[in-house]
Length: 59
Image (cartoon, rainbow, N blue to C red):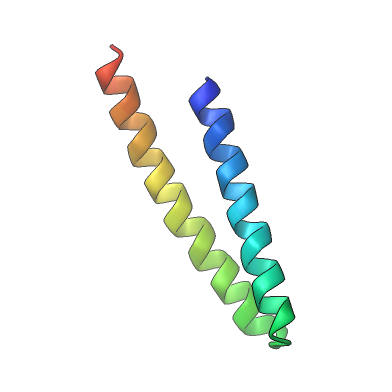
């Protein structure tokens, strides 16, 4: 379960970082939402595969 909490923290940090970066560039709301949606999707896919790999190794 520790891995899950670590991955959640990484996801949140990534999203916050993207929001700050985009907001700093003064972009409109649509590209911001699009970038956040893509980032969430990519990070969730990566973390899902990492969790499966971790569980397979420790079973």
